[in-house]
Image (cartoon, rainbow, N blue to C red; front, side):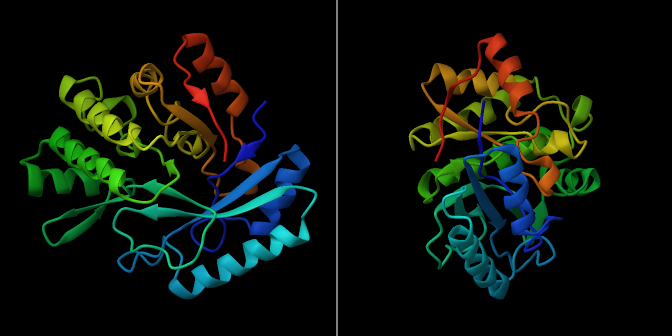
Length: 260
């Protein structure tokens, strides 16, 4: 049984629950540890990320909750650091490295906000070739090899809106090569890739990140994983962890599971 969850969002960014509501939900579930990972400040997307002032308040509140619930549950104060965000100034307990944006020309486009955004970007910058856009995404993911992070967040987030391969063929050799090249760049960091069930809980996909072929590669290369829910509401903590532990184990593709 997995009794930890380190990828969660609260009302400090785009979550729906307060931090204390998350803690109380974790206690009711018998969790041993819960980690908070508010979105790092992004000046180009203030509706989505924490503000600079809000980041300070977030840090204070999570650390206050650590003391309040000491002896009942271990609470960690982390941050989800986007590749295009500045280095955080506060001493967070851990950092999840994620790519939510691509800088294309003079534009910054969001990779998981809408199909039309991706289609338009592919037409404008890649001659309509969505696989080329996906290759650029994975090139950016690989850049986290040079950043100070502790967890690799939803490595194939680019597939969030690609249900039934509606945008691009995720089985194509080009796509798989790009994804696995990013994996190889990050495996050298010896930190876990997250198995993230957030897109399932929000109705976008029917499989956690990452895809089976990526998990198999991580296992074959001796990498590790950590189960995270990417919960934006306290009801979605540890979403379907047991189900996917069983499925991936039975397939023989579940890498070593670690925790923080």
